[in-house]
Image 1 (spheres, helix red, strand yellow):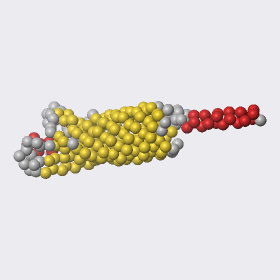
Image 2 (cartoon, rainbow, N blue to C red):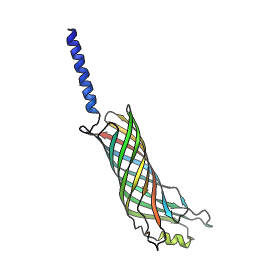
Image 3 (cartoon, rainbow, N blue to C red):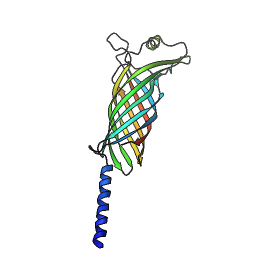
Image 4 (cartoon, one colour):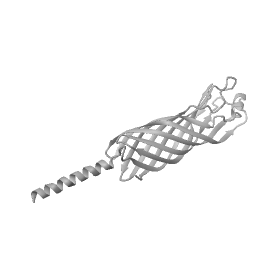
Length: 222
């Protein structure tokens, strides 16, 4: 009777270990999560020669999917709508002036995540390339006595509508059952110029810099 009891305990232990092993993502048994992501952003324009800028607040929302093929690494692909741009300030103007340019974008970042799990919690870093497209431009201004140089800049067309660059930042997540909540902080720097940057143009550099904070809900489907 004692031998049967020990045999049952050993079988139960082996099955539990095997189930735990199968639940851990691996190359042959990956885990796939899908879900949604929303957040806020602060963006600036890296422009040469420089201009006076203020904080330009935007937002982003979209869908995301994660593929985990190991206990410490994952690949993430997202399709996001993002509202970016820049805001100019005029601290020395005699009359109140304001100008903001809003860029409506579709952004597709492909991120590699490296993390360390602590129970249901994870902390790590994500980094990778990001591509996208600017499909609409909206200018909002008030006042009439803009300097001539600023009037010329505001009339410049957005040439670099194909956006590409790199993004990276830390993230934290908590998993419970098949559900996961993630908090991401990320910085994005574009390599494309928004304005034409030939030798005879006004600006040699006009790239986007964006800081993002997003919250995601993910559900394990495989």
